[in-house]
Image (cartoon, rainbow, N blue to C red; front, side, top):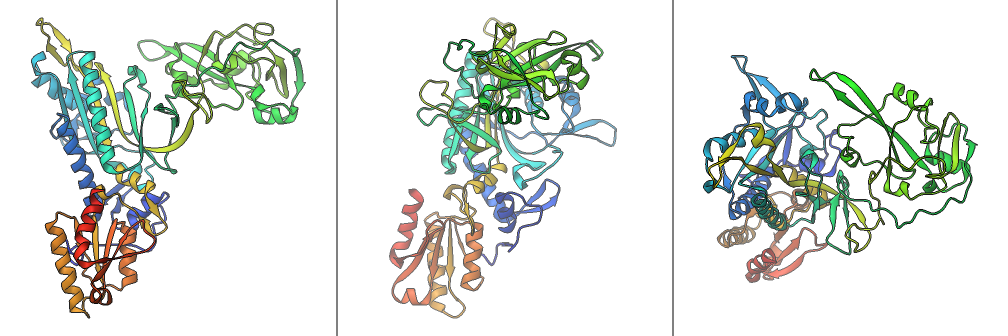
Length: 580
């Protein structure tokens, strides 16, 4: 490609609504152009990156035995009504009507449609396993789209769906995809981690997220530098401290804490370690009748250490706490007779279920609210001052330095951007849609399913968050819009420079190198600034003086300075660098 034929539209300044680095640089480099809130045109330079991402994904999916198809962006609501997601999914699901007043959705994902295909096409165990995938446009009506392609409303995604005869076979399909994903992300040339993720209501351990490591990432990734353990914050287990619980050493005392309604304030006021304090969190669960009306509510008290934060996913997995909500002020007053900020488990006005974090269950002589405004209790102990908790379980988010659950070191935390997810679905959709096959005994069985996604358009944004500097983007070779750019200096004034650039351009094309020749006759400073902003990883500069000495200048985007290379050796140098 020659630059004069291409559409290059770089900007000196980022738009005012661009908040993160990738949004700013993708806009300034002319990769995307905003059309509406969370909706972008993929400009030619950006589309080249997306196509390279797609090509790698497609090659590895095909290599893993998956079969490509394409499912419609607009889908009949009837299929979504079969699974209940048409009603259950929130406003993120874009619902539309056609001219006949029939309901449709603009797909954010395609479990219903692919299950419908499977139940029509797969009749026997002999046809299994199958893995069907697509690379397709999706739409999620985000309430607050932001960060450019990181959280847009329209996006491109690769979604795959496996179908198997039983759980054991489904686990094999899952592992095939997990390995394929590692090959995919290895080829992208990005630093990433595959981390154990929460499986939600389906349960089980077969769920992994693929996170590109970046300081600006929205997700916290927990890992052990001394082992292979890695999980997202929702999944990471906080081990109980070494026991046994110390014997009480203090007497129970009621202390005045005027205006001190937080654990930090109370600990500072009493000049005691915050590790000695307890945080009381009041939640409730509701029982509903067939009409969906609440017929009974149960209030629960969750206790975690004062310097810890609650993990809502873990709380939701406590037996009886699925679908929990935070208690109302009326419910809190009914059980504690006090306003939030001074609550505790001692001397309750009305009994409730007490769930203690593992750390809390092994604490002695702790501080908690006295259920009276401006007062707390110190020297509180289990068994002596109140009954043992009803449930002891892991409730908190892990922190740096916690022991690794695999027993091989301590935990560290870094930020990441989720760009892929592999997930075992079980029979959630096949049961809802009656997708069965005949087993070896001729009996109908529900298909076991898995789903596997990669954010095609999110991935370039994540790559930029990880690879940039003050001058612009620094693309990995595999997904750069162009791998090499040739920058002739004043080719209109020096025919030899133009001729050498044309010759080198043809030689690189013949060698299979994805090269662009900048033949726009731009000033060197402006030309270099454009390509540093766009982030092409390899640059060759051809000048009249250098050519007379038989050399050109080669510079990788990460290099601080250019290196002189003999004209006769530059093609082989580039080829060797691209193989490295």
